[in-house]
Length: 135
Image (cartoon, rainbow, N blue to C red; front, side):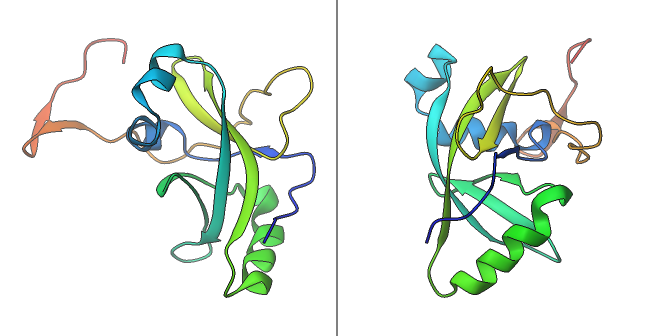
């Protein structure tokens, strides 16, 4: 069932979910760094969160500004899946998800406070690896 997302929005928590983006993107898409069309599934997450999955991988959360609207649509669509068009794109060093039709004039920068989760630590077999300076 298609979701109504208005003009669209940036998904939250991109810095914390970069591993998910890299897992969902094909090698050629990662290398090209160009925007990739995405069919996004919208569903309920833990607590009051509404999650966004692409290619069966969690790649974002619905921001507070759109949470109530999409949560109501998820509930009304059950048992059908709620889907929305989107675009996975590069924003500086990060992959981000835009939910909705591609915006005219390019993707807007993230609003302050959109990303609150910390980036995961780099580990190998559970052993923490130090981050290089500046990262």
